[in-house]
Length: 219
Image (cartoon, rainbow, N blue to C red; front, top):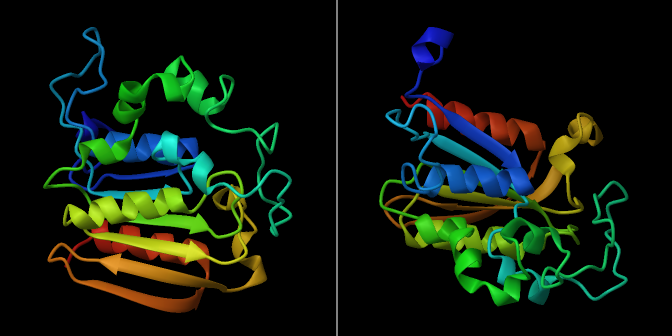
């Protein structure tokens, strides 16, 4: 099918932010046909991807509230996206996480686990780049650290960029890099288990571009 649209099916990358990042991680890590209905089309097609970028995504819903700032805390990033009720907690019945699962998350731990991309990490996961702003008061950066640590433990090639001064939704901004390079800590874990941690001043979108170029065009 891909070839009919001029697409190389061996070089597919996913990129998602916030809820889209959660979906991208699930799509990349879950076993084939895990979330497909019996009447879905193209069930015979391979769903594997070769690279994944995840921005500030919720990962483990039951750990969100414990790492959120106290009620009333506002991000230092004036453009940070907020929930309709900025102080809402994920355990509340009308939180986005509870609405997604059809019940308050504290009452359905098995559904929470099924929605957690970490539950599906296997031996052949695609390389990941994870980005999170340290001024994010909507989804704590701890969520990205959870995903990074789990992928590292599974010997998946993964990088985590923790970016100072950015809140939620920064990948939506076409003007993001107009302000110049931003200070970020980059943690990188290789498939052989080695890890490096370094600090950089970098533009954000070129970091994403460089990752996709390296992952989808291996030497």
